[in-house]
Image (cartoon, rainbow, N blue to C red; front, side, top):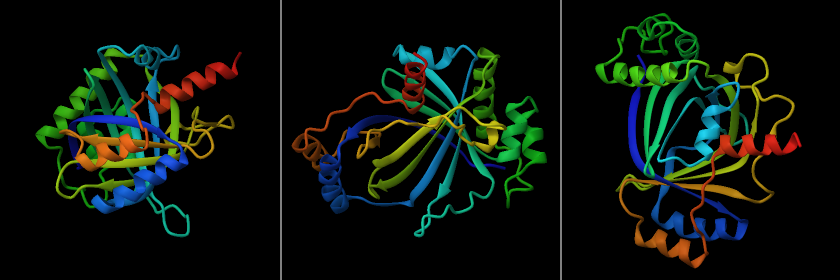
Length: 258
């Protein structure tokens, strides 16, 4: 069976211009090391209703909000080619309450995720479509609990279905001594699914969510920021701001219609 993880952490986003990005990188390389998967293409498929209820509520910045997505990570090789994902995707329920992100995640075979989210029983989907090398592993108690939380989301939103795809090239850094992780996304594109949504192919109206030269930085940590990072943010006049890939795509799409 699949790998499962639970995250409770603070996530702050920053939109950087090229000079700010270079200032961060100059300092960052002295303190952090590349992540285990340092460069990848991250593709996410978000669920919503036909009237966009989930993203509309999220953009209102309520005290509590949640999103369901299926995410695929594809390694990016030195020649720019995508490395095979091994048929693995992550089914993620992302909740945010009072600024703290609570993420529930299941790693599943792509066909298993498709079957489960289309109505098949979770354990049956895992048994019929196991991950490579996990053919005989039954879901753990924790994985079953995560699955129940995701199913509860779907029960609260019975009309939700695959609605939007986002894709970005990501570089990732980590602090081996703490849980600090910093990612940089650029470029970022988004669009409605073309054909089978689980193939995660963008339609012909793909949107570029960043301006030329911009980079989206995300700082993910459990405690406070280290002094060196606070200094580089202050020196380069970098301030946190709200940025939702799905939300930005939804708003840009709405603007195109008028």
